Length: 406
Image (cartoon, rainbow, N blue to C red):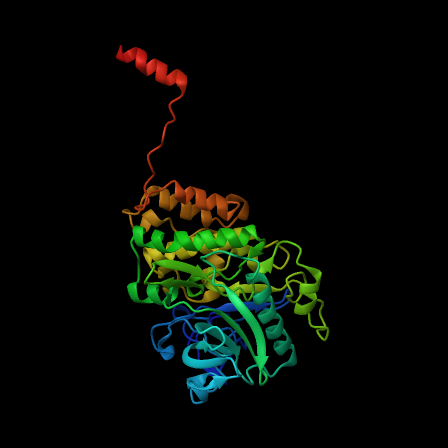
């Protein structure tokens, strides 16, 4: 197995790389690697992160992008690996109807809210998943931060989070249930999408991203697994603000509730551990996210959006052909991926130009705001070609035309 951290190939020792000690997970082309690093850490894969899939329409054990904890027990506990039992009540309010997805640190269920009689997605931390007190505090802060930041964004293409609570020692978040499938599974099945289909999926998601940025929230972990598609409407939704960051001042009272007074390191304004935390999913991470000394703003989300667009049109070849997650990332730090039209000449030039600009390693060379990116896409039709330029006839121009017709 190839180590996703150092790229060395060889047998694992107790689930860890014999060379660097990093946790061994699925092969690089089969899993998204979510990073949580401190400024002084060597790059390693956080196998405790899991993909949050809401409304998944396939069995959870077939989820291709879950990064499972190599030391976690197999699906032999309640609900095939989750802490809750399907068919049972969760407190007085919720009935657990189905397990949608699970990973090393938790699970997502479809639940019935008996108070308002609607289905909801219910995300929980798995019992006993975090034995380290520091990890427990981090998860608690992340859950609270997700609720706090996601509530700042009100847009139809952003999954709405309803509540946060704890029942019988199990922390949970409830959010809007979407009867659909995440983009990672669609990509896994379809391999590539046509330009019209990709635009149909990504335009609504971009609108949600623009709303998040307008509210001062930077997602920082935008990837196909965090974009849900609802087949009945064709709408797409951004979800999972667990490692999002606020670029504006948060209400002090709300912030106090996200901070853990027992934590040794002070929390920054987003409730995340300070001293230069590095977070994100390596396969869709912008170059600047690897440096704790560089400001990470909405241009990092623009970069991730460009990579998602890129992979939808030409497939995951940049990932599948890489020796390791780190080597693929380092290549993108040095230069942008090959232009789309060098792979598929049928892709319209305007689309190629937009994606290329999104993927510039230098943030200053990208679109500076998601709103600017949205405006560029709005100048294209459903096929990715420029819309006809509408000319406004002024009084003087109309008079000149009339004179020619006389």
